[in-house]
Amino acid sequence: MTDAPPRIRTLLFGLDMVGTFVFALEGALAGIEGRLDLLGVAVLAFATALGGGLIRDVFIGALPPASLADWRYPLIAFAGAGAAVLEFVVFGRSNATGIAYVDAAGLALFAIAGTEKALVYHMHPLVAVLLGGISGVGGGIIRDVFLARIPLVLNADFYASAALIGAAAMVVARSVRVPPAPAAVAGIATCFTLRILAMTHHWHLAVLAR
Image (cartoon, rainbow, N blue to C red; front, top):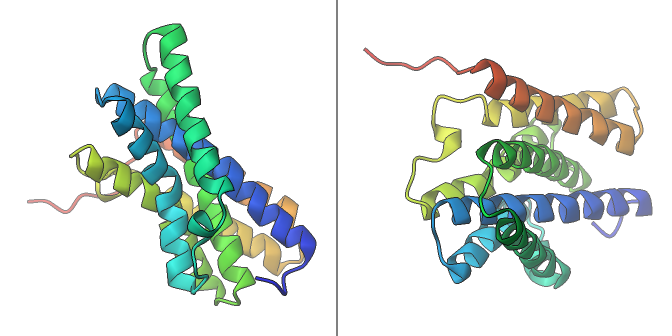
């Protein structure tokens, strides 16, 4: 990524940092709701926050993965976990609706960050969209596996679809020469809005069952 313009590197780093904090917060809140101890909450926050980005970097050949090469990633992840624990201590409970909104924000941020990084590594736009989707849902899959429940992305829910559509919206915006930052905002807004609408109106993909 050394040949990427400074503004692109700054955009990617910013998306990664905010997404890492948001997903760490969501993972920790999910761990608290699942009655894990403090270590379990920290581990779940770390895995949720960094899992999607790690998978993305391995797939595009960005080695070592940024989440392992840069100490700021785990620091931000544990900061998110600390914020979740502090919230629980102050308010005495976790809010399921709040967790869902935080999860939607993390999904949007990582889907767009993953797509942008794939484009920086000169991946085909279609591949970039797919990698954006993987980046967005990877941490959530790890979280759900750790909590011994069916991953949300594999259930009949408009989850990965929102990530893919948001990533595609960003790629389309970039193809018509929209600057990187506004294109990223458009993709994030598209993904987040679709995910919230899906939760509000109970949108589901078709289930193939007899």
